[in-house]
Length: 208
Image (cartoon, rainbow, N blue to C red; front, side, top):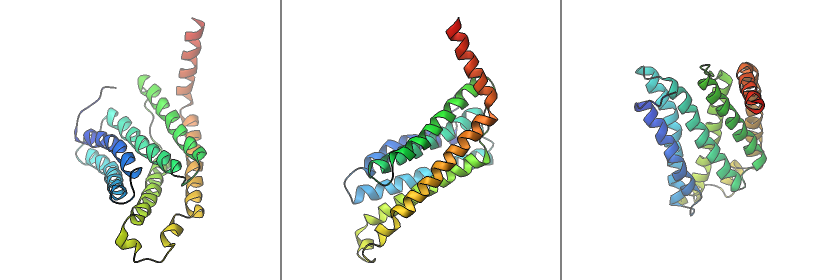
């Protein structure tokens, strides 16, 4: 699969490049750096919608773009989950399930593309990604507001902390973790022929 340089793929690449900047800002000093982190993540999240819309609107869709776009999503989302787990918003084990599922699916897609049998992203998997971005935008939005002095001075004490209560955050993460497991199983079942190719290829190499 040959990389193709066009506007949607450039936007997708920028989303990956924004990821380390987001990590640096959100892990920085409270205040303006965290506010900029919220802005960066919002730009990255909007770019996910925009590059897909542009590719469909102007007929710029390609095999590379169909692989590259979800890969960029996984990089951004996985990094954000690890950052917030390190900040004790939720447990690491759920992040490992979510990211592990994405690594598995990415490897599956690579093998399938090499064999000329590309994997089509399911509707449920698209909803999963959309829900992950929505959940992360919620957390980042609340964290950003927590670092805006004029806002915190005008709301009741404990209001922002209540928006990040374990009941809300942990429940959201449990739902996303279950969706990751369900869509992983869906991919494995629907692409079992690719898994057979991978296993048979591995066995052939070990016995030769």
